[in-house]
Length: 236
Image (cartoon, rainbow, N blue to C red; front, side):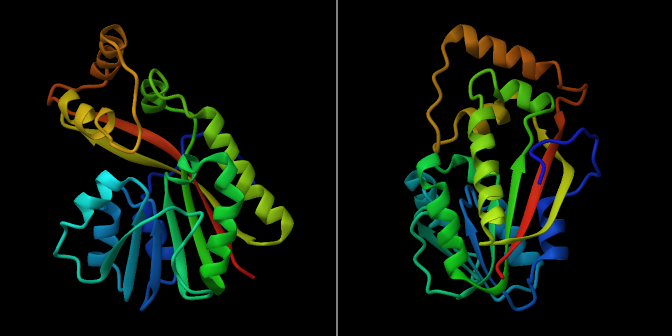
């Protein structure tokens, strides 16, 4: 397993990899850390899943998710990876999209053991994590440097593979594209996220805005090519 790898990589999306590599046909999927449920929606609407259980540890975002009423296949739950309220062997695939590194280090091993517990035999856990590289990462590190927590998340994954708790099915490096309709959208989506409290004074705010605006094109859109790593771990 590799933490980093030089790019560029093929442009893919988590949804493409989930559709191709996970047991979605009639599957019961558990998404841990669903955030605003944007990918949750696409999984439920575009893939032939039976059910998606989408959990979020941020109570503010969870309350917003509960107001979503047009996704009959989706059940929203409040909770973290360290205590999953599902029976043993009841889930076909577990998904964590850019969320494993948000788990406190002291809870990582416990959380991965919980994922192992709820997966059926031969079930797959899909962990997609951003690499510590790229222009978007350079903006983010101005106010929220995630180098250390991403390293801890990777080491936790490697440890459960080395232990034999999971088998490494595959490790995929890919680039994804993110777009913002100007700085206002970046401020709303990123700086205004309720799962993390950022300390940003006026000087730092100006630096963030200046760095972001360097990537805004004539159409007012900022586009970033972001490197990612997806680890697919199979329960023996």
